[in-house]
Image 1: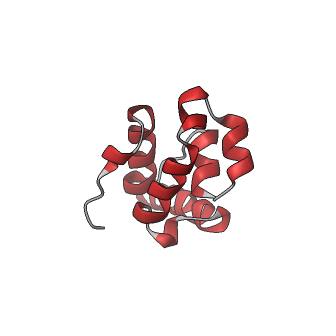
Image 2: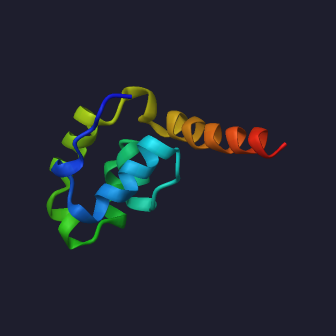
Image 3: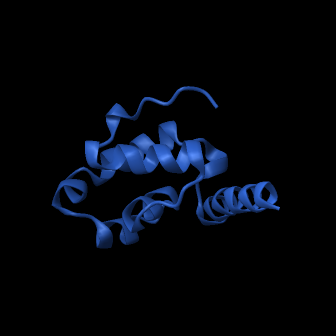
Length: 91
């Protein structure tokens, strides 16, 4: 996967998004909604900083999160891929 510049995200979101993209690790509810392109869900979970930058965050995700990692089904598959990988490693 190519190098992703996370600096366009609020600092409080960078680690969570990096862990999701690079390590298949589940995010919190706000980032999950962003990844799934669920604007109303994201707004419901947003703190004041993220609510004020909601469009910017969605624009960043559209430009930087690979398409095969966006959307509800793709997000679930990505997370489940890590679980399957870890189970195979442990077995």
